[in-house]
Length: 130
Image (cartoon, rainbow, N blue to C red; front, side, top):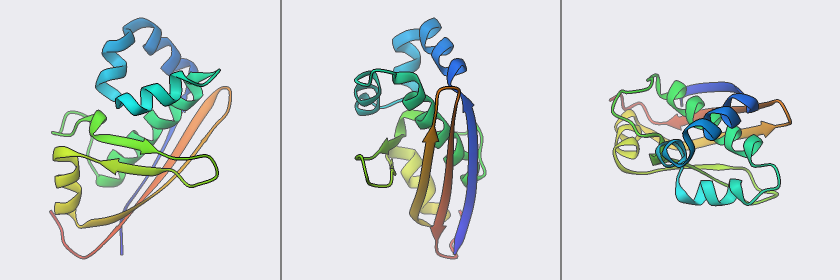
């Protein structure tokens, strides 16, 4: 059963500007160390950061919740190896909230280019409601 669907489109320039303005403070609040290492290791890191930002936003939308409702951005990690679909890995209270909502699978798709990044998230689970 589909529990929720979320989509988000992000301006790469907006993320670049935010990272340049707030630096490590922003990176550590939004991204996991593994995500930061992966993205900053790329020749053009901002499309990769923007795609991960979009995935987190899409996840929160799929859950039907917004910012500041007890979930931490860095508890949602985008993992993926080249040639394989990305995975969202949940930790802490975010994982607990998703489990209470009945989420058993998360399907994620990412895409980015020079100006924009987009992500779609589909939550699949049982009838349980939290």
